[in-house]
Image (cartoon, one colour):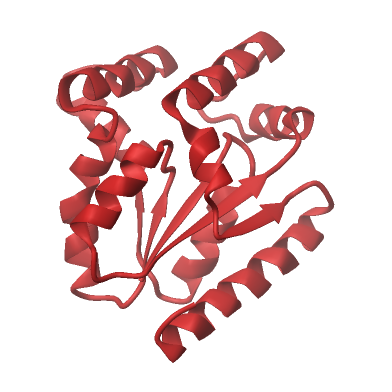
Length: 190
């Protein structure tokens, strides 16, 4: 089984990924693949460089470029685990790449929605090098994600978590969903 986790930046995707990892299931981050590619090209890990490489990869290899680069990592992990989580899918082209590469695997899309103002506050507090520090940067990043096609992936989600309450409320939702998906795996389908 492959579980794709998607959502806008700062929505709470990593909580879902961590919940699966805590249960022993591996993950592949498409964002990490772009960061690795940025370093391979001899560039410093800055917001601008990562964004340029992300766009350049899509120009060179197509809209599903990052997914293409992730396929072998996912394949290797599926050899060791019955479930692999893919974090950060941004387009239906990428979903199609995984469906095509793993036709025998059940593929489940989990999306997280969090209101923009709440995501902005969380990203500012998170403090990662590529997190926006102004509302204008935040909106620009959101528009970039939407141009990549993330809205289509969110629209096609099998499960949607709304993350607009307390941290504890969201963690309860995540735990319940992860357990439901694992039960489906154990029954041979979700």
